[in-house]
Image (cartoon, rainbow, N blue to C red; front, side):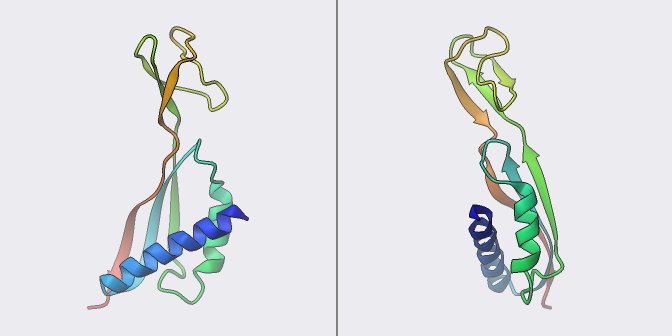
Length: 116
């Protein structure tokens, strides 16, 4: 159920921006969702269609782009893509790492039809 409130939050942001910019209709919304974000893209997609009913977003295409996980090893300084279950440096096998990408969750862009 966490994704329902997340999807409602997305909708509030999009509707506020649409109102502020005199948008007649939102045609598409692009989300960036990291594989380590804890957000399930399929559930966001499912809830999106429900919460969009009766809004300027109804009928819009939801584009969800997955951001892969990567780490920076604090031992060898290598930045590497990783499997989400293996937080070890693939180069030196070090365990002292910082996550560089994969936790993202944000609205990247919207395609709209203006109210002109």
